[in-house]
Amino acid sequence: MTSTKLLRLGRISDRFEISIPHLQRASRVLRRPCVSVSQRSCNHAVRPRTETASNHGPQIIPRRCNPLRTLSVRHASSSTTSPPPEAPSSSSSTSASSTPAELTQDLTEGLSDQPLVLDEGSRQVDWARSFHGLGAEPFSKEAADVLTEPITFDDVEIKPDGIIYLPEIKYRRILNRAFGPGAWGLAPRGETIVTSKAVTREYALVAHGRLVSVARGEQDYFSPEGIPTAVEGCKSNAMMRCCKDLGVASELWDPRYIRKFIAEHGKEVFVEHATTKRRRKIWLRKDESAKYPYKETKGFGST
Image 1 (cartoon, rainbow, N blue to C red):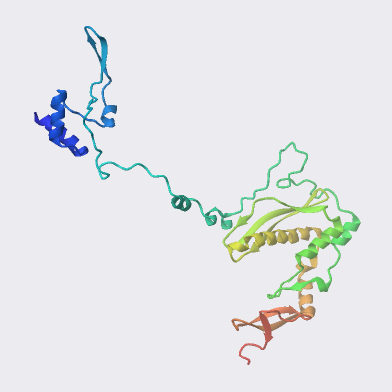
Image 2 (cartoon, rainbow, N blue to C red; image 1 turned 120 degrees about the horizontal axis):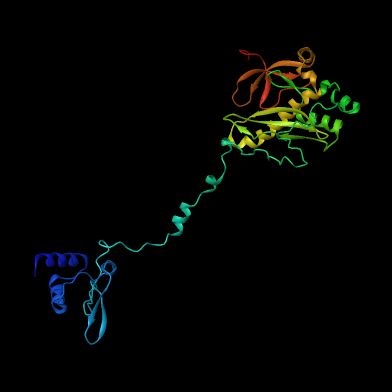
């Protein structure tokens, strides 16, 4: 037997656990070289050829398929051939699935709440872009009297840093008395912008089907969980700024009124934090006292 045939038999012997003498005996019996008995070798065989017999007509003979009938072939060990793919277990499918934390939207990247753009042919006004009715005519005298009515000292509050303000709920009460509940509203004119410390959005104040004013609100937040609350505070801040164009609580932007209110209704006191024991100076109304976690105390260096 030539070296080429021995090399071929050696390869078959390595791939299948069959001894070379066994293959040699099978080859001599069949009088043709044993090429391969695997299905892969059969797949790589050349197309069958047709030989014509004198008495029996055409006969189809495969070229390279080995018709071993008595040779039992054992497949090689698992180290030679790869095992069949296993179905993924429930644990792997669970780990591959997204966790609820991954499915939760990160609000610090924005809220993607761009206002809906209406069709130009629609009868409804697109308040996200339109300035319909702005400055067309004045409101009734009754509404104007309510809007420009002077605010009382009891409605004004003081922040710890000395800034005076009117609570946002009182702006809403003034608008309800002037236009009626349901006859005014705030329309967003852009999506909410979320920065690392604050949220901001532009709103339009609409009353009786007319655009009154446009202002941008803003509100700080301290953690991502506080972004929804900050968005609501941003809307209220925009409403208060829009009300300036209607003359609502215009005294709060008058420097003389601010100085008079501070002098007559404000006081500056030292307070101590109940937990950190730090002392600081804050402003209060004269008819109010410090609230928890602060309590009034003496100045710095006092005992």
